[in-house]
Image 1: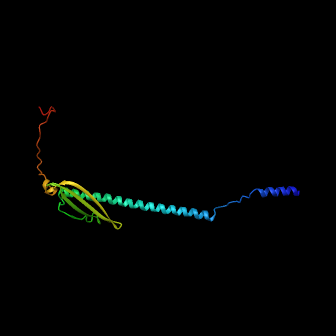
Image 2: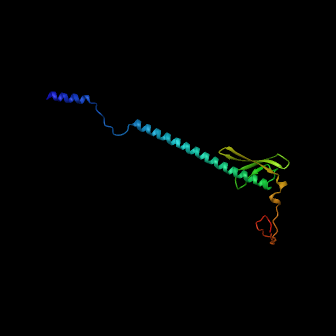
Image 3: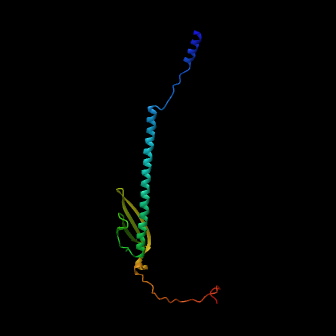
Amino acid sequence: MRLADSRRSSDQSRQPRRPRRRGLSLIEVLLAMTIFFLAIVALARLVDIGTDHELEARMHTTGVRLAQGKLAEVEAGVESLQATGGDFGDAEPGWSWSMQAEAQAPTLYLVTITVTRDLKGRPFTLQVAQMMLDPTVKGSASELTRPSSDTSTTTTPPTTGTGGMP
């Protein structure tokens, strides 16, 4: 029996023992947590960048709207070509505007409206330019008069569609 026992013990010593694994080691847990926290930091930075871009896009949209509105006021004659700037009052607090009108011809001007606002400690500036005729020459909205309330109408004779021949 000794011989059989010695063979059995020598067979067992030749096969490596496989240790049983029941869980993760501390290093594996720390490595997984490090990767997780780095991913969270990267995602937080991406959200911050996206928020900054959204704010800048909103400022750009508002600035263009305000500048185009001011150009329409100048074109309608509500705002003079000699005006230099101002703010938008309570409608858009924090926004200011300036205007430069350069004569290109006797009645033709290149009007540039610049709108500005402070955006997180730095100035946000937007310019819109348009060529326009002098509103004092072509007339302005402030010079318009209401049409008379006369309700009489004139009638035109009907045509037959043959080039105006009856």
